[in-house]
Image (cartoon, rainbow, N blue to C red):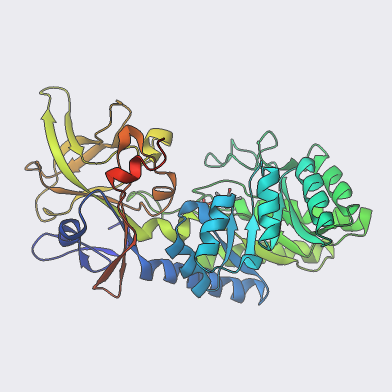
Length: 433
Ligand SMILES: *Cc1c(COP(=O)(O)O)cnc(C)c1O
């Protein structure tokens, strides 16, 4: 199986986190998001332990909460002592509702509104990750009005060649994010920020991309960033206290995706950092990374009920489910691969090739193509889509006025509880005047 929290019972039912998915579908209805709470906590602990081991006590992983944002997940992050990234007032509000201490939160985004910046400051945001000079100006003015000195990281683009690393798109020079080192804009914004009396430049940030498996992406980014740190030290006498290398470790969506061992990967990055700091004669800054997907993705699974099965002889077969692109947007957005299973018929041979599609009025409303399910698939069967913990609920919409599914958390091999309730038809009209 693609993840060890997915198994099969003797009766042919798919088990997730040790629990019968067919029973869960019956109890909570479909479409249904399941989250393996134990898995989320385990991932947090793996990252926290790896950081302590390889980077020392002050370094910490920050959960990039855009991957899955709801009150329960912020409670878990609070309990697991994780820092967090937020990207909007909405995420801040949700974290506050969960009792999360915002002094451990980093506020990202390439376009924070003035309201966002005020909202962050009013609620004691730990650090802004400023994308550009305009933001620094607003932060300076608002922090000045409050008579505080606000910690800020600057988001830079290390300019890693995207042709070498296909998965990477955000660390390029021409990205909409951050200031490029190569063009001199990174230095400009650094010099500008150092002159602001109410902005405390804590260090630098970069984020090279997502779903990264390539060998040395983080190492290369770290080297480029540290060289910049050393240059700023030489030119301006400014030594960065923090260096944040972003998120992006890949997860297994399908069998052909590799396993990635976080401790090993973090160890390799740490080795490159130590070597580079020694070469440049600078001390190692406090290192942060911001995993999102790799914390929650394989802790998630979506369950649907199959409806119409359409066989078009000589062409293709379709299995329609009771959800679709509103709750599963990543195939429509990027053609992302996923593993689909027939949860109530795991002991039948899966040799019926089909497209699993949603119920929306949109031909691009596809869960996955070239799926192999048992030939007997039909109305009422339960279709499971694996590895849906990241960028599913958080990207879900109400397209076609479909209520968003609930999130049901699983723990301890037998306990389940709703963390987000299913939207009702009334919810859909809540804001209609
Ligand atoms: C999206 C994002 C992350 C998390 O990326 P994952 O691929 O989910 O790990 C981290 N940092 C920044 C700045 C991001 O935009």
